[in-house]
Amino acid sequence: MKIVCLPGDGIGVEVTAAAREALAVLAPDLELEDRPFGGAAILATGTPFPDETLAACRQADAVLLGAVGLPQFDAADVRPEQGLIALRKALDVYANLRPSRQGPVDLMVVRELVGGLYYGPKGTRDDGTVFDTLEYHPSQVERIAHRAFAIARGRRHRVTSVDKANVLETSRMWRRVVTEVAAQYPDVELEHVLVDAAAMQLVSAPERFDVILTENTFGDILSDEASAVTGGLGLAASASLGDAGPGIFEPVHGSAPDIAGRGIANPAAMLRSAALMLEHGLDRPDEAHRLDAAVDRALERAPTPDLGGAATTAEAVAAVVEELTR
Image (cartoon, rainbow, N blue to C red; front, side):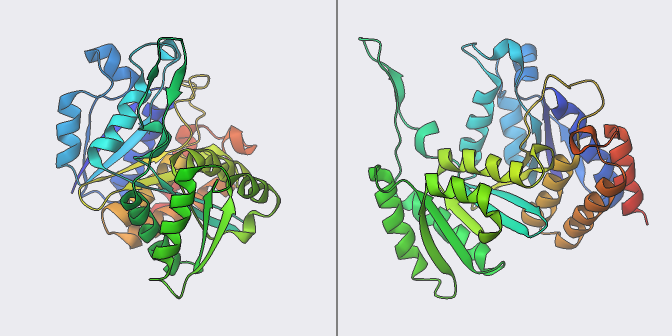
C-alpha cells in the first residue's frame, strides 16, 4: 500500500518523521513517499498545492499530513492553508472524524468538511462590505448524517446533532434532514442541541456525548474545544474520509512555529492519526489498536513538555517504538 506523506511546515516535518519511524516498525510493508505541500511548497514552487502533489495523492491509498502554516504567509494572497482546503475538496473527504478521549470522556466529532462557510461564495462589494456565504445542499447533510449514525452504531448508539436552528436557515434544513436520516437508524438515539449550548456542555459535562454531528465551522470550533477538555491539541488526531479514494489523516495542532526545530513537539497526535489511517484508510484495525495502545503507554512514562513532562520528540517516539516491539 502506498502512503503519500505531506510533512508541510513547522513541527509537521518533525511529527511526520516520528510517524515514519513508528510505521517502519509496525507496518514495514507500507510504501511512504514525501511530497511538497503548504508553506514549504510555496517557497519551492510558488503554490501551496502543486499539481504533482495532487496527482500523487489521488493515486495513493492514504494521505498522511503533518501541518501547514508559516508566519510570513499569514497576510499573504497565497497562503499554506489554501492548499489544505483545496486538498480536502479535490479528494472530496467530506467526513472529518475527531476522536477525543480521556478518563470517562470518549466522544467523536463528525464534522462536515467540504461545504458551508469555508467553501461558499465570498468577496468584497464596491462599498467595502466583505462577505462569506454559508450554503449547504440537503444531499451534503444527508451523507454526513449517514456517516455519523453508522459510526454511532459501533459506539454507544447516541448522536447529538449540533446546529443554530433558531437563527440560520441552513441549520433548519440541517435539522430536518438529520431527523429524516435518523429514521433509518432506529437503534440510535438522536438529540438536537444548539451550538452555544453544546459548547457549554462540552466544558461542563463532556462525558454526556458519544457522537457529535455538525457542520464545517461549528465542527472546527467544537472539535478543538473537545480536544482541550481531553488533554490538549498535542493529543488530537483526525481522519478525513470520502466515499471513494484516499482519506487524509492529520494531527490537529497546526505547525506551531514557536516550537519548531526545538525537538519538543508531542508526536502523539500524529501517531494517533496514523492509527486512524491504519483503521479507516487501510482496513488494518489490529495494527491501529496496537499503535494507539503503544502511544498511550509511552506517554505515561515519557510525557512531553505540553503534558507536564520533559521528554523530547525523539524520546517520546523511542518509547512508542519500544512498546511496539515488546
